[in-house]
Each structure stands twice: as C-alpha cells, then as structure tokens.
Image (cartoon, rainbow, N blue to C red; front, top):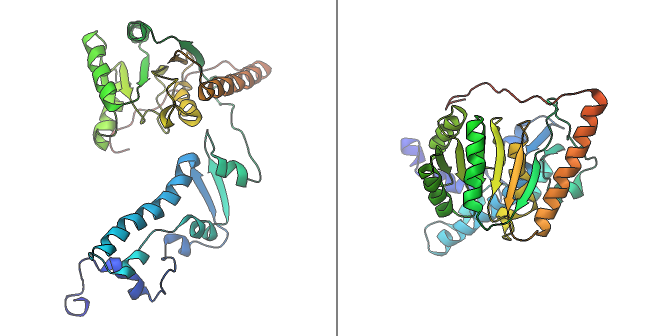
Length: 302
C-alpha cells in the first residue's frame, strides 16, 4: 500500500519497523531534537508527573487487549509514549512548579523555593469551618451577600448530580448560577467562566474542575461542601488547590461545611494560616497594601 498509493491506514501502529527500532526500544520524540542540557519546566507537577507514568501504563493496557484478541500485531505495543524512566533519561535540568508539590518532586529536588509572597500583597484567604446542619440556607445567605457586592462564589460538591441539583436550587433562590463539571464541553466551560466574569452568573458549582489553573480575581468566596468526607476530592492537595481559587481577592474567604476536622482539613487550614502569617508580615515590613488583581478580559480563543 505504501509503495502503490503512498499511505496505509493504521500504519503508525507499526512505526517500529519503519524506524528500524528493535523491540522494546523507546520511540523517537521531540525531546530527541532539543539541544543538549535544555531546561524542562513542568507546571502543576503534582498532576503532570503522575500523568506521565499513567500515559504509558494506560496505552499498554489498552493495546494488550487489542493484541490478545487479534486486532493488532504484537509489534504495535512499541508504538507508545515514553515511560517515566525513559522520560527522565531524556531531560537534564528540570523545574517543577506547583502550589502543592507531590512526594516525587519533594524527594528529588535539590533546592525548593517557596513563592508565597504575591506582588499584589494579597493574602491567602481566611478559612472557617461550619456545621453541615442548615448548610444550604447558610450558603445561600453567604452567596447573596457576595452577589450584592458584585463578588463571585465557587462551590465544590462531591458528585456531578449534586452540582447540577444545587445549581438548580440556587437558581430558584434567585442567584444566577451554573454548574461546571467534566460532562460540560471544553468550549462551553470557557463560555461559562466568561459568564462569571461578565456578571452573567454570581455562583459556579463544580466538582473537580474548580481547582488548578483557574484565575478568577472576582471570586471572593469558596464554599467546600462535605469537606470531611475522605477521598481524593477532599485530600490535602485538593483542599489547598481549591482554597487557592480565593487567593486573588482582597476579601478572600473559604467556608468548609463539615462536622469533624479531618487530617487533610487540619493540614490545609494550618498551611494556609502559615502562608497568611508570612504574607502579612512581609506586607507590614514593606508597607504594602493588598490590591486586587485586575485581569484583562479573554475570549474563547485566547
């Protein structure tokens, strides 16, 4: 097929033969074409590092089934991503950037630099733990206060259904609300976030998307429901990342609804307070007054 028409559908599965690689050798990647001693910067490393390992494992698990049932030849297993060991062998200098570095970064970094001080002087948010009894009425009251002040609120739940039902309930209570979770399309997510910034919404309710990477200076309140329910959505990393969404506002506050204080909650509260003390002392020493961030508006295609 290649000789006759110049292409063959699915031939990339057998790239090992075309490249002349022996079985088991890593594939060529863009990393092979970078100059010597290049610098690698891994952002949100607490997520990215596990994803690099998972990429290879997931690819192999899928192809093992295809090979076993005869849909692929065994050599298709070598058309794959780099595994973590191979990736590390191809990079030299590396900077891991994360507000919540994982155990791998902490163990393998020769120097750790804490970037706690913000140029704006804004402190990490205050944190308050409230009982779950009457939490919906209480959070509606808090959301209404923020809406009157033209400030925004993010609420995190444990399930998509809870997020949708709570968003509907808040809408009925007179709050302009929408939900954001993995079933919402990528472009729709951007449109919803724009709606929050353009005052179309007062409140966004989500599950796991209201964490890393969201830069929403208008958000002054984060509400975490079921904060004491153990799981990856309420572990130390998730809590600190979620708390950080309110760290762009001078009136940043976090309310956790819980009936007990879990170790993860305790760590997140103490770590946030530690950072607040450092930030407040720095501001006092240098005469800084916290100023809110004013980001330029962005479009769907920025």
